[in-house]
Image (cartoon, helix red, strand yellow):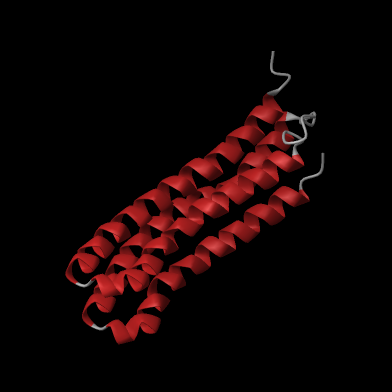
Length: 159
């Protein structure tokens, strides 16, 4: 009855990495886009600068997708030959996907809010773009750390 439980857990981990990190990115890009649209309404010449700020929270969704691809590749789904995973192995893969899933969700939301504030800086002082860019970029650090941990953990699981 539970012969495929390991693969179900592993697929759940892959799905969560995409879903949660993607949800965070969608929110972050959305709020930053709202702020960017307001700035561009007033001064269309700032489009390029505010677009870069808006795109920053989107990286967490990409990281979640990357972890899902690594997972699907490692468990043989992409090649059409799924591995015979035990329940414990599947749970380990699920746990390995959680860092980018959870950190991606939270950091993208906060990065979006930080991007909004930085877009405000660019709106008033376009010459401060470089400094303004640092604030949302600092939030990115934690998403990158979570990405690295998830990939390292997935690749370390033996099956």
